[in-house]
Length: 235
Image (cartoon, rainbow, N blue to C red; front, top):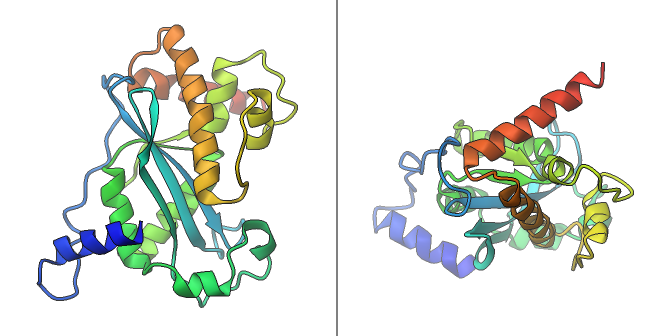
């Protein structure tokens, strides 16, 4: 991954000094009549210094692409950011990313620019996506001044929508992974959690296809409707 970014930076600098062009990044795509079978979906997970998006920061990004009903392991993103100034004392035992790793991580601005180009504006899924969305958008805004909004969908909604009678024993990623007999290689590792989420997403998308969900808009609208119903039931 580091070598891929190095080559990408060299191409984009093109001998023009140290500045990278952040103005010509791909535009986020709006859900429409794109067939799910043809769409590329980004499944993403973050590791952070804590749970408070107001004061905590992103330290690692893991993501993998789904396309054509297949997880493409040659199309993924897995990086620790170079942020040695951050305090990780409260969370290092959870994610295992210590000060040395943050010192040796990749330059944050370069990594984020590469991430945006790699994402190519495609829709993003994450487990409890509100958390990842808040943190990633905050980081992109503070580090790059980037404010465009991608389409986000929550894998934690996707599963109960298409498996309403399932009883996984809880609402967490581990509960659903156990329910479907999936093995998660290393929890609280961004790349491993992204891969586990992608596997669960494929299971849900396969059920969606059988229920006649064919386009990205149909999927997005169904999740939005589910979220509205869930919020209404809280009152």
